[in-house]
Length: 295
Image (cartoon, rainbow, N blue to C red; front, side, top):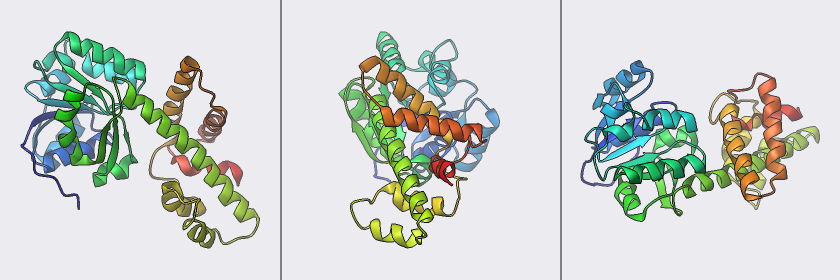
């Protein structure tokens, strides 16, 4: 059971009640904050209110009105602009000095764009993508990587700890998104390596559960091995972070690499392996389904 550090209750809004946002907003409510939610499908917002209390709003602008902090967690750059900008967007409803915290995994460019527009309105913007997947959101143990102004970060960090185990400022606007890209590069190579290791061991006739139990005590140990190794052996891929979402994230990584000159041969190859899984109908399989290409 998640325990919450005692802090003064805040008036907050949460925009986007998908796989991650529903649970994240729930932790804010359980921590004692006054939460107003908005979701494009209104029935999901109504379900959230029935579960956690608080209230729902018909537009992002209405949800953000009077909030000290507005959290957002939507799909991509265009989704983010659609809920932040325009007459019905969150910026239009926010009061001077309020902070918008974006948990969407998006581009560093859109983070810098929205941060500049926020400054023009005397608002603050923190890009804050998360790692930990839906289980991390449910358990309140997400890792949050932030970019933006230090004073704005200090204001939101204790509130965001309601659904996190770590909330860290890594630099100016865009730094959070770039850090999330680093995270996805590391995961892509790690999952492919684990898939090849298990497939190799199976071909060799080894008891791979026993093997993972042994090598998981040594230098090969990782979160992926501990949590996804056993389910990969069991051919279970119906949970966790979906292939479609990973391809979206790796697309952001590869676009950024073109701009900054980084060489990512393994990441580009694994991205194509995920494309193979999509062609097999595996769009919603967990990312550990890479092993299916090898069996």
